[in-house]
Amino acid sequence: MTTAEIYAQIQKKKSFLCIGLDVDLNKIPSFLLEREDPIFEFNKAIIDATHHLCVAYKPNTAFYEAYGVDGWRSLKKTVDYLNLHHPAIFTIADAKRGDIGNTASMYARAFFEDMGFDSVTVAPYMGKDSVEPFLAFDNKHTVLLALTSNQGAYDFQVKKVDHQELYKEVLTVSKVWKNSKNLMYVIGATKAAYLTEIRKIVPNAFLLVPGVGAQGGNLREVCKYGMNKQVGLLINSSRGIIHASNREDFAEEAAKKASELQREMQEILR
Image (cartoon, rainbow, N blue to C red; front, side, top):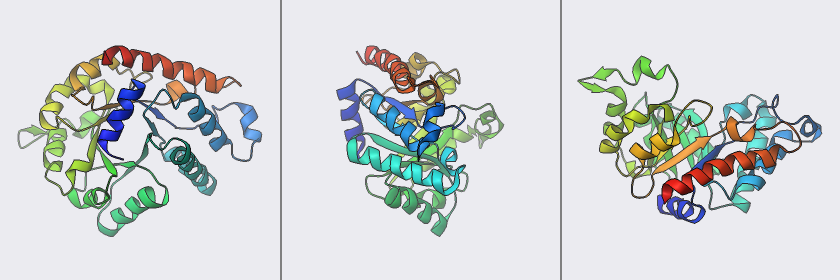
């Protein structure tokens, strides 16, 4: 999927919402636990209720890996369902991989070829040979961790290296990697004040922005400093949408929460 196709969806839906499918079996409605595949049934209901309100879905793979083979099977069924019924929606494997050489290539094959994702999150700590194997895939995107929402981000990401903050070094150096046109970047919503400087370095890249809602990020602040001519933002909300209710109305309540964000985005896009 190209960024032009993502932008076309943003224009069509008047939304740049990404919904995180981070399924916690302890939080889903109890009646689903009686189903053969409760994770997939939950995801399918969420997707059916919200697909018209968002342009991307982002399963965090940890929430599937925790359930072993069954979890991976649920994840594959979820991505297959999206690719079959909503192929215009961008899919992100939030896997945060980060290894070199053949290992990175195998990770890339796993998520792009076998699982069928459009993109995957990758940690940049090991440098270009841990990222370029992902960038080698046509029309697939690598979402590089740059400046994250968590408190621990201050441990390393904003420390200066050769008179420049480390996150800025990551952004700057990554631009010269092979096929860097396929890069997107993770920027936490709680770091909105940094977005002006970030846009000076990567003015045209899409930014995946988690942390709006439950983590305290402000949507309008993020848009004020981070939006570009093609919007350039995918604003993620996970548990604030999908676990809005643990009753039989869970999908309808998720749609209400997603609709609230979509309406705010529509207003901003005006």
